[in-house]
Length: 377
Ligand SMILES: NC(=O)c1ccc[n+]([C@@H]2O[C@H](COP(=O)([O-])OP(=O)(O)OC[C@H]3O[C@@H](n4cnc5c(N)ncnc54)[C@H](O)[C@@H]3O)[C@@H](O)[C@H]2O)c1
Image (cartoon, rainbow, N blue to C red; front, side, top):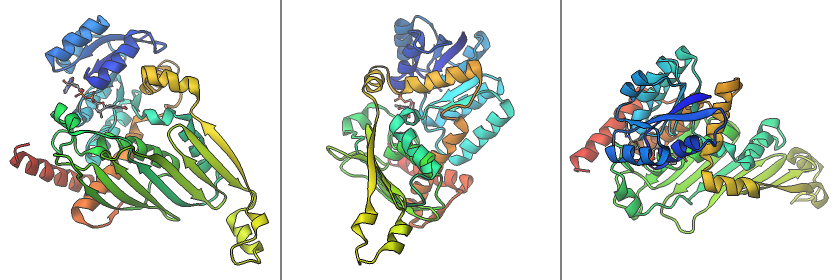
């Protein structure tokens, strides 16, 4: 049985702490928690029965820990993760891994030196709909990808939400808005399925909210053979969550809970070469269609305990038995690089080539954080 601690027991950390404390993660037990806020500590202690520390370094000195789960605001992830990785303690960090690729690169170096297990809470990778789409793309079943459209406008957030947490939707507290907090999941899934693009252009806006960061994004991710058009917002009702990927052997239309898949009998090059009609021969355009679903039982279980429990279990399993993580921490940098590139493209009004210059990005981010402070936010 491995000893886990949860650092940051606010909204999300408390969920992780309860999942561990209630024995829902095989091979893991909640040994203690840590939070800088006294009220959070008291609440966590009352709900889980374990000791609560105010400082993660003091906790490390007093407890024999095998793993920590970091669920603090974004800016603190790297420093806390580095501290524990250097001690050989396994780290599962919440997303995003950091606010700048510069810091994420530093953390990846620390992880390499440490050899302790390092994971990230990219829980949407546990959605079997996305896993299936990934398999289709990676296996070549869709052929060469020619188009992708990712629309994520179902993360509605009210002004009340933004006013609740001091660190939210600010450059200094969160390192961005909708993109870094909510859409990091979809950007990770997109790159998990399609890989990383070569270049990025983007426009970000703030619509109907009193915040300094964006809640509306339109970005183009340019790959060698195609462009992925990414649209995200947190002000649209009812909102859409849809990924469409078209290749020359088929089409995927994937929502959060199901994907419709169309696999062509002949690929587009064959259809084109056989065609003796201007719109193509109808009989050559045949396809097989099937549907993949999230699964009702999984949906109910994830609805009750959170999809994050799947990542906790995967992490605990690898800690106990070895094997590859579904969401290795080192891959956290990819989604973050896309986010940094979108912000950079929006600020400079220029296309950004990946990999991004992390140091230059950090300097730009600090400038925006300073401007925000000048405005008294
Ligand atoms: N995986 C998901 O689906 C998901 C969902 C929501 C939030 N999150 C992530 O979880 C993290 C926390 O978000 P939240 O909504 O729970 O925030 P929150 O503000 O509710 O909780 C953060 C907690 O961390 C504590 N804290 C701050 N600095 C600390 C430090 N140095 N040491 C110890 N405790 C510290 C705060 O006092 C607070 O209790 C963020 O990274 C967020 O993006 C992930």
